[in-house]
Amino acid sequence: MDESDEGKNRLTELVRDKAPDVTVVIPTRPTGGMFLIALGRGKAKKFISVSEDDVIDLVDDHTIETEVMAKINDALRELT
Image (cartoon, rainbow, N blue to C red):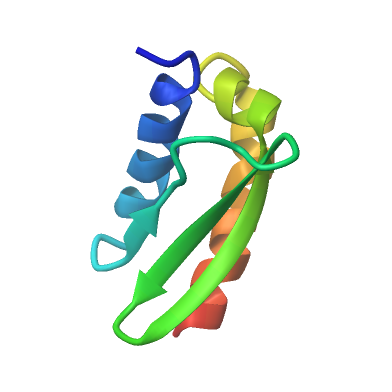
């Protein structure tokens, strides 16, 4: 298992808890130390960038979770 897998799963849970109808696509590997994560609802798509370190630390660090959740909330608002 990749060290970022737990963080990817947690990020998916955060999105699904807020909007179960939104699809989440997370690349298997980061590009330039960043994950470009696609959130989709129907034909609408929004992308958020999250650093590899933040994805890895997402499970254990509440501050990072709060920051990532703010990005998710902004993207979800734009999907409606």
